Length: 194
Image (spheres, rainbow, N blue to C red):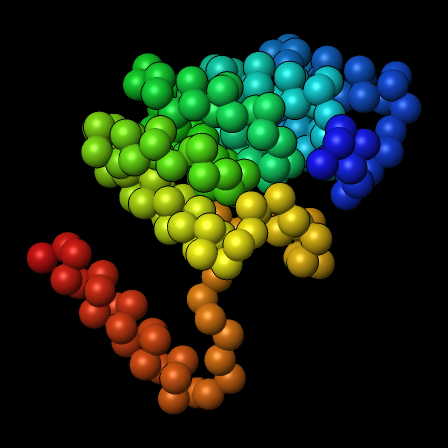
């Protein structure tokens, strides 16, 4: 895939608007609501400018903003964000919610090359929520691998231009089957927490 194909699902913006949004996102003097508007606009623009601003935002003093920046990087499915997401995942000085979102983003990007670092965090991260997210991300990548997909086209199948963090359940329309699946999930949850 060449670089022109990579951003086909992205919205278009003028260079001036892109710069405005990037500057707004990383400016700590701006109201948090304005920074969030910029963040979600940048998520839809894609490319190096938005990616770099979002990467900077993963280190913001607001854990909520940093968490959402990592989320947006995963939704962009830009493989060039992987080194930054890996750095966030491995930085134990960052809040677990930010590291959790970096793991989720790595799963959303869906590349097999993310498996070793997710496995490492699965066993070494001190935060349970991060370890659990690594497990979900690994399951998602394994299902993508088994289906022959690399994860890069997941947004094309979603009417919301989003990537689900966990592998989708198989679709079924039977009410009895849905009750069974729901009961199994509850049983699994209780077994895991005994």
